[in-house]
Amino acid sequence: MKNEIRQAREAKEASKNKKGDMIAICSANGGIGRTVMSTNLAVALAKNDMRVCNIDGNFQFGDLCLSMDVRPTFTIKDTVEELDQMDEYTLANFLVSHSSGVKILASPERPEYAELVTTSVLEKVYKLLVNQFDYLIVDTEAGLQDLSLFFIEKSDEIFLLTTLDMVVMRNTKMMLETFDILGQKEKVRVLVNKSSVDSVIKTADVPGILETENIFHIPNQPQLVTQSMNVGVPFVSNHGKTDLAKAYFKIAEQLLSKREDVIVTEEKKPPSNSILQSIFQKGKAARSIF
Image (cartoon, rainbow, N blue to C red; front, side, top):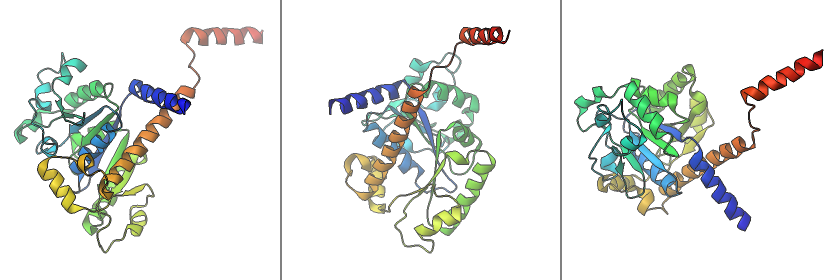
């Protein structure tokens, strides 16, 4: 038992020293549940003592802060003026704190400010945040907008949300095909939201339609979701025993397990030779020939 506790502590400490993982929450259509996924997954990870930052990637009409009932003093727009001098300590001042421990980088307060956010801004912000947090959860815009593509390409995993709706499923299939063209399909995991609703398309049909087996099903509890969004309290915080919350905890558990496996694998790798060692070994090999 003591060994298990010690190993758990060592794994957690090693996780703190590893570069953070970025997860892009995407969907082909709007209204699929990206913000619900972003907020609840972030809080579920934070409940496991992970350092989590939520990034509102919908720069015109983002509502990540509203869904978590926080009022930001600053947004990503305010980082633009400080970009050249900005370091991780400066950037921390632009984040808003949630009671769960999750930090949020808010979208601009007005849609016209969205044009100030460029890939250069995102690149600087990403480099600073990824070394401070275990997870960056990005609530992207629907579809494949230019700035969303930045997050998609930088991400370690892409969560592609869909439903059993015929139109949404068709567009999801096209989005998967586009990810394949972009060389991003290996990072994609499909999440079927509201999977328990009665539909012409059945859950068993989804792997054949989308031509992938990497699928996770999320049950439908619309009243719980609506109430959660209206009061600004993620349901994993106060309705943890519901089937919906359990699905999110399971996703978080799988992410944590994958992260720990990566850490263990990296620790087992033999240290790479230094340049001097490489030169010495080459010289030794040359002498043995003669």
